[in-house]
Amino acid sequence: MTDLVVRRLLVDLDTPFDRHWAGGDPFVSAWFDALSMSFPRGEQFFIDSVRAGVQALPEGERVRFADEVKAFVGQEATHRRLHELFNRQLAAQGYVNAWEGRIEARSRIAERLDPRHGVAATAATEHLTAIMAVYMLEAPQQLEGAEPRLRTLWLWHAAEESEHRSTAFDLYRAMGGNEPWRRRHFWLVTGYFLTDVLRQTADNLRRDGQLWRWSTWRSGWRFLFGAGGLVREVFGPWRAYLRADFHPRQLGGDLGRAWLERHPQAYRVVGDASA
Image (tube, rainbow, N blue to C red):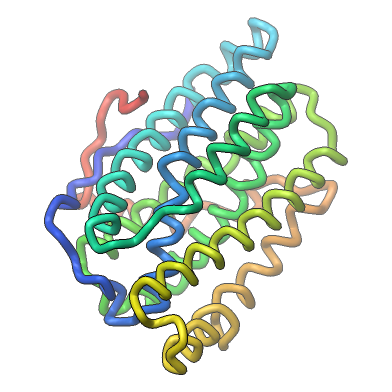
């Protein structure tokens, strides 16, 4: 049995939205746009990795993880489809997704390795997304003034990332993954993520004609490093992953559950959204 639930988000992503949909802020819009560009191929990597990981387990262990992995796949497949729709709007606005190709190249390398490597990379990335999700749920003012349907998309996604934060981590340990490799993958994933998100955000801003504006840099500094900013707030939870006694459940999932309980009109529960 699992507590994970597959949901269908009830938002319209076919209607075009403004370039600066995040409260008119070019930097914040470009940052979230960059994240969205990583999701379709990134979520597919997570799906493929946990499926391969489960198949590598002894039969008894496969049964133990079956329901949770099925629900994890369903949630991630739903995220993938929604961000494909979001990204189509970005492409129509003239943005170019360069991040996706780098994820594809790394995924092909991972396919040739022991499946524990893919699951370790998934667990590491899921921790990054989970701590950013908790931050967004704690500081929803970062999306203040955003187009309501897109604000709902990001906070719903954050709630589900918080919800399934332990799946890949627990699977890695069940596969016999060791601690040194868990930490190595976390350092590697962190390096890739920081490089890729900044490159894609900068390119989005360049194509938007906003990269070299003082107001853009000021907004970016405030969003990332200012009081209550992303980097300041997530550094402690980021570092916690390196502890020997770490487990994702230590982050807590109350904020995600609370958001889902407060917004039942935003989604409906479905039986199976896997792909």
